[in-house]
Every structure is written in C-alpha cells, then in structure tokens.
Length: 609
Image (cartoon, rainbow, N blue to C red):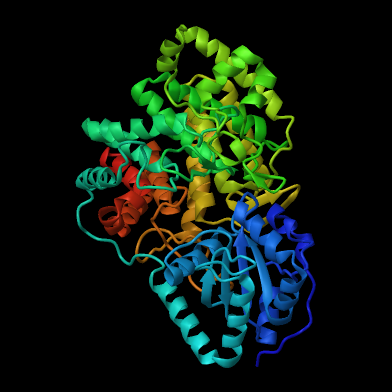
C-alpha cells in the first residue's frame, strides 16, 4: 500500500554524467536509475517520477530552475515519489523506450521528458516540460503531481490498467517480425525520392515546416539516388537544402559546425545547442555532396565543421566530447549573437559595416533584444557584385574578419560543455574525419580519426569486443548498445579504407561479431537495440527508423555488406539481407524515416558482398 516516506537524499553526486551532476545540489531527492532506486519504489509501493534530459537542453535547465530548485516542489516530490533523473545520452535505451510511451500517450515528445511509472516500471502518465505555474493549455508541475498522487491513492486499478496497456503496446511495437520475401529492388529508392519530394520545401530546402532538423541521412540518400539513376530531382533537393543550411544561422558562421535545429522554416534562428553527432553527420554529408558536385562551398563546410570538432570538442586522451549547451548564464544563444556595435568594436567601422551587411547583422536584429544570428542572406558572389568587390578580395576580408570575431567571441562566457565521451557519437566523428582525410588529402583529419579510435578501443573496450557506451574522466559506465557496436564497426571500416591498414579491418570484424552475438534477432532478422537479459527494461526494442542519427539496424546492415565485400563471406551478407527484409515494410511505407536502411539497400543493389 502506498505510504509517504522520508526523503532518501539526493544521490547524484557520485554520478559520472555532467547532466546528473547539474542536479546533485537540487533539494529534490534525485536517485540515479539503479537497483537501489527501483527497489525503493517497489518496497515503498511508491510511484516513480522519471525525468529524462541532457546537459545541452535549454528547457531542461528552465524546468530545473523553476521547479527542481524550488523547496516546496521538492518537498512534495520527496514525500510522494521516488524521483529518478536520467541522462538520455548515457542511457539512450531508457530514453527510446519511454519516449515511445510519451509519444503514444500524448501524440508528441521532447525534452525534458516527464514520465510517471508504477513501481514495476510501467508508464501511466507522461509529458515533457511542465511550468511552475499554470499556463493556458499547460498545467503546472505541482498540479500534475497532485493529480498523479490522487490517482495512485484512489484509482489504483485504473493506474495499473493504463500501465499494463502501455507496456504491452510497447512490447508489441518493439520491432517487426519475420522479414518479407518481396523483392528488395530499386523501386524502393524511387519511391523514397517521390515521398521526400512531396514534403520538400522548395523555397528554403529541408522537409516540412518549422522546426527544421538537419536531414543528414536523407541528404546522403538523395545523393546516392542521383548517382544511381541521374535523378535530377534528388540532386536538386539535396543541393537546395545543403546551400540553405550552409548559409543559415543553423551553421555557426564563425566557429564552424552546426546547431541542433532551426526554430523557423528558413534555417535562420537555431536552437543553439551544438552536438558532436550533428556536425559529424553533416560533415560526412557535405563531403559526399562535394565529391558529387565539386562545389567549393561544401568543402569549406566540411573543413569548418571538422575543425570545430578538433578545436572545441577534443578530449585530452584523444576522443571527443559530446555537446555544448544552448545557453550561457541562463540566456539562450548569448554566446553566438551580435549587434552592429559589437561587430564594429572588433573590426572598425569600414570592415564592421561590410561584415554586418554580409552576415545580416542589423540594428533591429533577428533574434532577442535586438541581437542578430549571423547568416549569409545572399551568396558571396552576388554580395561581391553588389558591393563592387572582387570575389577573392571579399573572401580575404571575410576570412580575416571571421578570425577576429571568433577571437572576440572566445572572450565571452562560453556555454557549458558536456565532456563525456560516447562510443557511438565518437564513431561518427571518426568516420567523418577518416573520410575527409582520405578524400580531401588532409593527413591531420586521418590522424585525429586514428587517435580517437585508439582512445575508444583502449579505454572503453575490455577484451576484443566488450565495448562500453560512455566514459568520463577516467570512469567508464553503461554497457554498449547496438548503435555503439554498429557505428564503431563502420568507423573502423572507414579507417581501413582511409589508411589501408589491415588492423582496423580486423577490429571491425571483431566488433561485428560481438554485435551479432549480443543483439541479433536470429528468428526474425535484424538486431535488438539492447543486450538480452536487462531486467530494468520492460521491452526490448528493434527499430529501423532514423532519429537524429541513422538507426543502428541501418548502420549494421550497411557495415555487414561492406565487410562481406572485403572478403568476409556469406555470413555477414546473409545477416545484412535478413535485416533489410525485416524492415522492408518500413522502407516502403515510411521511406522518409528509413533513409539509413535505404542507403544500405543502395549498397546491396550495387552487389556489395
């Protein structure tokens, strides 16, 4: 029977996650997701308040300041709930599982994620951000907490029924059954281009309206379809989007790399957090576009993005950190925006005015408080013609101005960094650096890729293939998941192709074998996202949909095909084909969400393996 009990104390101080450590001083008695916390909920028959977020999330910090640092809210949570805080980047398996529940129950998702669980971990109520005070259409957190407590005390059967239904729905939708015998053919690729074309924004690039997320994997698919069949529509969609993102505020025009997404349809105003994986994925996409079109802009974007990773995200041991926060001093975007006076103070009146015109910095501003997000309203060639300048002369002045402004920006209070090292995100950086080192003839990129790969293999891998997911400051935690194995095996194949060294290929095979042993669905094809036997998960997911990154199943299939083509026989190829067959319906029905699988299909149709 439910009984309020005394607070067990905030236990986050011993965490390795920077996000959890941000909450270690909250008056809320936060618990990490571990056996002790889950046992406490069962023993006391108390509901669990599960709060999932990440360190670069602006609204996570807003909710923390409004509610989790509030003594009254904390007292209520401590009296009635076991409150558990999870870093979604450290536990992407929990995040994926309960995000599926949030979306099923509310029709939307996002972070911070707020989920209420029964003591046996079944979700019965969920949402995202709840304010401290009621707002139109959005109840306060306190109102939600009181309603949950009332329901848990007085309508327990209803709570349990809802939790059982949601848990069963998660298990049923965890992944496809045995694969289809329908042909795996190029019609699936043609259908994908057609579906993407229906959602394409011909004015601004991208797919759909605001907010707009950078579609790195879909862009690579469009480029592959163009190469396969000279599909000009596919190329036009890719080029329009790549150009718009490169010139928009989504791209950090001074420091390189990309912000997480744009809040508008024009790619102008970003949500300012910067994630390692976005810039790594987009660097690879722009590199592919440069190799396809030869456009110098794309090469510059690749170099700027990878230079940002090397300059701002490198760990002293050789790996790469995860993210930069969206805010500085509680103010979103403050580190990145400018006024005309600030630009002139750095560059002087003549160059300052020129740079303001080029980057769209105005007295009115395009962001908050009269500040401007730097962007490029018109291409450099068009701007030079209007200004009566030679393009090369303009580029020289802009290059000097960018360096001066970047140095001045570095004097500002920087956004907080999440300095944990994640195996899967590092793999994406290794892949991008290895490919760029090879195709741009840039040894320092290849050398950085090798350093990062050695760091992960030496520090986060015990034995030949027992990989871990996260590392921070000498401590490793959390067993690796499918994405870690699939992405890192792919990165090692990229390193082998960039360097010609057989040792990288040998380690790729070992990781691929470890992936098969730990995650394969031998009955239906494809791979589960988590290892078998995890008692803290109410469902074991097997998905082919891309999220911000390509699905683990997509990368696994493509990597196994590449390994088979390098002489590793029919075993890898058969598993890759079984994965494609398992997700054939996904590729046919929602190709816009399965670009990663379709890229693997493109490789399969080329006869790889």
